[in-house]
Length: 161
Image (cartoon, rainbow, N blue to C red):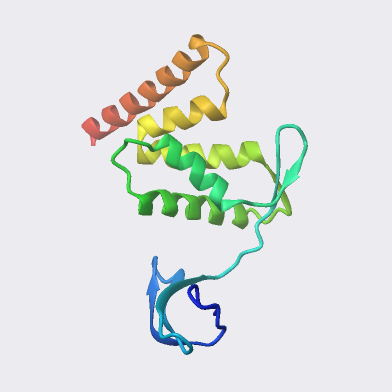
């Protein structure tokens, strides 16, 4: 691993431990040349499908793009960075499990919205408003009405249980 300070390629691992339910390994390293200590993270790389955009273009799977969209939707909400990253990972696993070489951005968006709806309704509405490109207030209100109806159905079921 290349030292971020001196650029030397020789470093020793001082400490390793699993993070994120064992999905990543955190390693503390020490540069043999300058003794600088730094941290690296290792994550198994998955072969994600290419994403087919609305205009027909194909792009490689980009976790950072998903994190960016989720972060904007969750801005100023009581949602931690860890929860956002976990959501991105969960959707990535869901999409990968479908087993397709290519997948529509619509399907990716629907998976994101389904999980986001369970996490935070305000973040869900924010994400949906951008993702679905509501043309007017009526479309937006329709989405809110559906969200409220779903919430009322859950509340009614809980009262009967």
